Image (cartoon, rainbow, N blue to C red; front, side, top):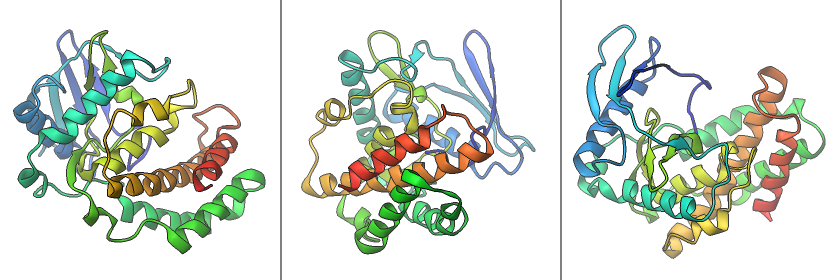
Length: 272
C-alpha cells in the first residue's frame, strides 16, 4: 500500500535502464528504493532490477536501475503457473535478507500503527460523508478495531522480514517463466503475514480480474501466529482500502464506479 499520493515519481525508460526521479521532500522514497535494490542485488540477485547509480542528495533524487523484461501481473487473470511463480518470488524476497540485517532496517511506511492512526483520523473526516453499505462496513470495521483489532505487540509474535511494502500486482512482472519484483519506495522491515495481506487486499488484486486468494495463500506454510496475524492484517488493510476508495470516489476517481461498494462487501466478509 502506497504511503503517499498515487503518483510519487517520474519514470524514464531506455532500452536497458529505468530512471526514477522523485519529487522534492520525497519522504525517503528514493533512499528506500536504493537500499532495497542494493540489498536484493546482494542477497537475491535476479529477483529485482540491478542498481546502477543514484543521487539521493539531489534536489530531486534520482535512482537508476536495470530494466526488466516481462509484463505486470495486474490487468490479466493470475492463476496456475503465475500464482506459483508469484508465491516463489515473494517467498524468496521475504527469506533473502538475513534477520540480523533486517533488524537494522527501519520499519516500512504504512505499517500497522501508522494505518490505525490514519483510520482514527478518517473516522472523523471521511466516515460522516459515507452512506449505505460503505458506511455500514466502515462502522463494522471501526467497531472491530476498537474491540479486538490487531494488538500493538502482534509483530513481536512473528519473525521480521524485508517487505516491499506495496501489494500492487503491477509491481510483479511475469516473463513467461518467473516473476520479478519492482518498486520498493515503501519497502522496509515488516513481517510475512502483513506483506501477504498487502497483496491479497490491494484493490489491484480484484477490481479488474479476480485473484484466487485461496490458491495463493495455500502456497505458504504459516505458523499459528502468522495465520492469526494474516487474518487481522487482511481485515485492517481491507478497512483502510474502504476509506481510501470512499474518499477517492468523491475527490479523484481512479477506479470504476461502485468500487467502494464492492470493497464494503469484502470488508464485511472478512469481518465475518
